[in-house]
Length: 372
Ligand code: PHE
Image (cartoon, rainbow, N blue to C red; front, side):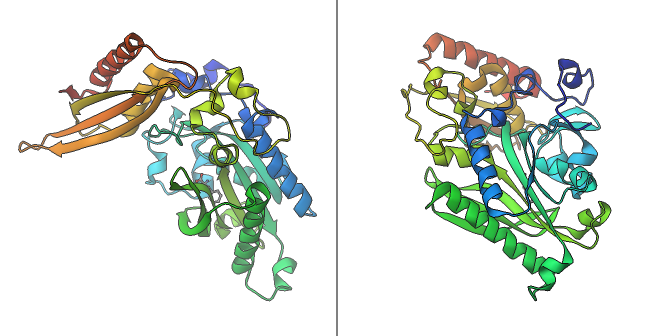
């Protein structure tokens, strides 16, 4: 069953040594920001749906309630992710048990929907990735997958080969979508690699003085179509990150705000109103804490960040490596700067000192590093 399954704590917090889903992530399951019509993520989803409804004669079927708990097979094997690909590691993906993960992309549903006979579909949902901490990264975010299958008569009359045909249709579709959403914004296409598409591309948008990746896409690998009953077709697919698009459209400066229940945030958005500029209600001061330690072989930044989030929750704004050296004995020291800031209020010194103390304790006991 891939319908709107209700998730209980027992589904997720299994007593399994491979389980690496912390409580801070568990509490995000089922919140469904993308299904709230007055939330920026929901507003954006609806605006993208409108674009597809207006521009395609064949309606795209929308799925926005597929369960985020999927098998390894769905998340990786079905989309041809190689056995040794980093995205499969415990460092990158949340495992519930050795065979079950929190989906790290909506591509996890491509194969099953193809097998159901779907040829035009959009899948929207929450996805989960262990990652670093800064204003555009959060371990839970939302993606929309688009998928369109073409039949031979469609490209045959165009006179170009099927792959080029699908690639052209894809770029036309996404450039049209970008215009529909943004009007004018600085963007660029770059060549990319995904195991499930070839050729593959990424679209980047200029934001906060940097190029930011907002979507990946490409012509679907023939093997995926063949395995799922579409050997004679070609298809394109894309996966776009809704938070990042919404940050640009609504001028939302920090990705944590999407999770805020503060009325000063939530009351600023209304159904169908795309791109109303967010007014920051106040900018509270950040507080910086540095921490140095000797790392060991198993140290990873993602593990550190998870501890920081576990302790400080959304008060953690950024974790940044500011110094890194190896001594004569071959020991490597890292110094991290943790930025604490609330989006909603001023923090007290005492509160931050408590948090930092707890972080130091846990870093030592859970990561087995030696504090300096
Ligand atoms: N699943 C990819 C990601 O999450 C995006 C993607 C989807 C790329 C479909 C190509 C085709 O990064």
